[in-house]
Image 1: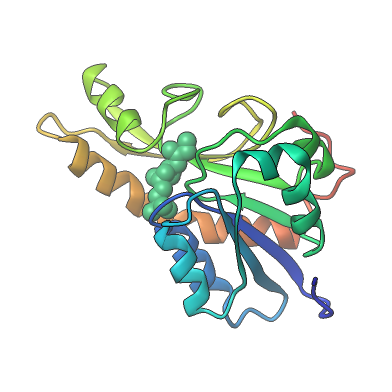
Image 2: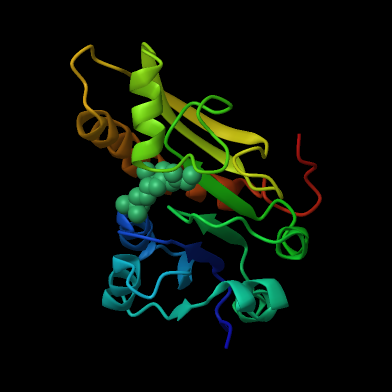
Length: 203
Ligand code: GAR
């Protein structure tokens, strides 16, 4: 496997719908210097897999045993990734996987970390917690991935208001719009600035 072109390679990990993956697939479909080379999922029913296949991008599905054993690491290494993007990926990556790709794994999270992050904080759980806490604003965080949920160094944040009459659904939609707008741009900037090179220290 792998790619013979001299483009920078993105590997996406996604667990569900994959609307962020879709934005990445669209943004880099005809890009001169960057390409999405594979999408992996822990969920065989993830619509994200279909989205990747629609773009002719190879997909892989794995279980916890394959992730723990290093099998997934080997499969991903074969694609020679310059950046691994967790786009709605809900499992914690093992240390060996994280350490194999220093500064090359990023995650998008639907809140202003460090608020409303950590184990179990994903999707609707995040937005409900934000509403319950009567926050005036929420937003997105794109950050490097380490061995802990949502704790790696932040790369980019964008804010949006929380309206008094917001439901989980209306807030989720507002935040998701921000994700779609900014994720492809931030990924492109990282790959063209070389900020994700192994020499760059994490904060
Ligand atoms: C996105 O809102 C993403 O930020 C969130 O899951 C959603 C996936 O949507 N990720 C997390 O909560 C990670 N902790 P998508 O499958 O439509 O891209």
